[in-house]
Length: 165
Image (tube, rainbow, N blue to C red):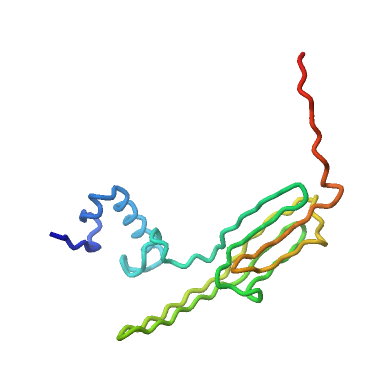
């Protein structure tokens, strides 16, 4: 016999999900705190832990080799004109605005969802970077920024012998 599981309006009431998942009551409590802080009634919005809320902060990967530093920012659905990359006083800044809209009609169901938000990420650039040669390009929803190092900053590796005393 399948048991129907419903989200309880009473915070102290244990649901069958809570008995199976020891973290569900903690998630529920954190959801209630955020809902209270944001001025919403508990249950009116999706859980922050279910990945359904719109996150405007892009994921960033920073990699380095002997000649360059590369920054990759995940910006799915964004276009080049929605993103600005600037360098000022040794700080590289990526900023933009995410806009997402979904309008779906199936049979008798009509759904329209919109999400948006501004973001800004900043990184201090080392003095070894050739600031005049920085390049940025968008490709398949990922912003690639290449920061080449100045030639004098790229030094060959020096092997240091390990000796006995």
